[in-house]
Image (cartoon, rainbow, N blue to C red):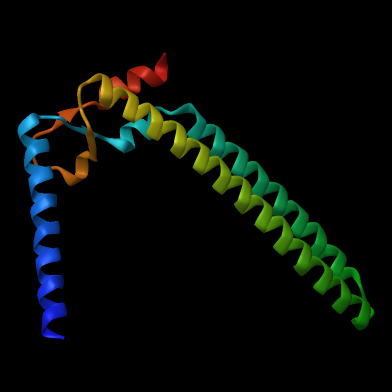
Length: 153
């Protein structure tokens, strides 16, 4: 058991040394970029489009729910009313899931596009590592303006 702990300690020490060595090498080479993602997102037109589309879907869902509610409240027969409630609850779950899926798919597409764009700008700037500006106290090459300029091309 003590032998295994020694191996784990040695492996852990080597891993820490490797990570620190990589970090020091990256810092000495000056190849760390920082980006203000909030500013980038504010300038990315697909974000506004995605939000508008999602708002329209949610508005349509709300109108549908109001219509369903009116139909349920108009039904006087308790058995039929209970059937309508179950029917509309299930349909609401399906509609909500479809809206969530569309929203998540749009987010994934935007994430992929922005990641590729940011990486491209970073590589052209000679940077191998990109960090969010909020994670950096000082240093790094700010590529935010270059990313925004690339978006506007």
